[in-house]
Amino acid sequence: MQFIDEFRAPNAVKSLLNQINALVKKTVFTKDSPLNIMEVCGGHTHAIFKFGLDQLLPPEINFIHGPGCPVCVLPMGRIDTCIDIAKQPNVMFCTFGDAMRVPGQQGSLLTIRGEGHDIRIIYSPLDALKLAKLNPEKQIVLFGLGFETTMPGIALTILQAKQLQLSNFSLLCQHICIIPTLKALLALPDIKIDAFLGPGHLSMIIGIKPYEFISQDYAKPVVISGFEPVDILQSVIMILMQLIKQQYLVENQYRRIVADKGNTAAQAVINQVFTLQGNDEWRGLGKILDSGVRLNEKYREYDAELRFNTKRHCQQDDPNARCGDVLTGRCKPINCPLFGQTCTPTSAYGALMVSSEGACAAYYQYRQSDLI
Ligand code: SF4
Image (cartoon, rainbow, N blue to C red; front, side, top):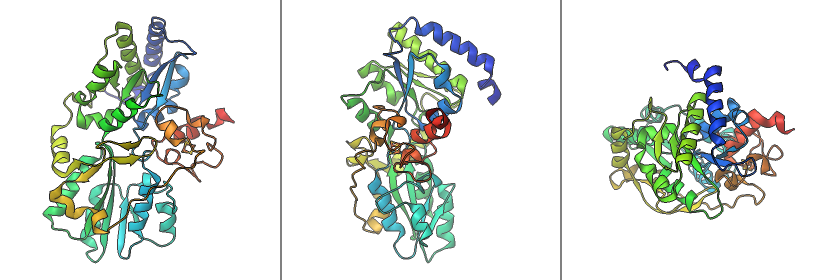
């Protein structure tokens, strides 16, 4: 298949749904005890809702939404650190748009931009580098956020900053790696995940091998999936086939994008610039062993936290907010008492409601009318 229409063709979708309906009858799953497939990536969550796949699939299949949205797992205290830095004199704080409306204890980056602080939305990390060259009298701080998908671009930006000997550029590093996150998730005692729809874009960088512990140690299928309806339904079939055969593997449905070994050049640049160090705190997942991504010693001069001598904020979430439970698949967004009440896209409490990959944003955008 070459064109996007082919991945959305009604006949192809119907045929795959027929296969799924037949296969699911060969499993032990029922409407009351369904097959729980966690989609790790928020891009999958939005595709599932946008194309109504959750409503087309039989009730024996239930999608649960995982922690694969980097903005969503941002603890509130990190936004407060962003704000501490952005409020310093002479700072130009550069971020991708997704992080602008995430609330911290002191408000969001959007609210403090309204107070006159210099916050810029960028579309590429190189935009921040350009701003550093154009504004030598200012301190340009780049908010580096995301899983391995965004790390190569940020790493290359740091290498260029070093090559250009830019002394007015630094990075507030909030990257997170997927494997420690999944290990932490699987170690939780009260979660029920039968299989994983693996993240497509992130796997393009890391490849499929790092997920093998899930199939080998936990006997759960993992299928790396594309984002179109045909991709997702084919992945569901691959999961069902593994469960029927009781052969648990990491399979790659998204071969047109994801090479099994990933992108080795991108992996090399990540390893050159970043290191895993320290047990960082993540929203919904708590502290994860060795999950803190830091700049390597050689590039530590670009660490904004060292340059601005910031402190780490520890903020407790509202006890009524169920962001953590949504991120770990313990409940759906609609089970949160704040959903659509005090938490909406225009006055969000949690990042899941404002991130373009957030599960609560997906429910609000595509299912709100069903819920009223
Ligand atoms: S509705 Fe808001 S508070 Fe509730 S889980 Fe979603 S983002 Fe968090």
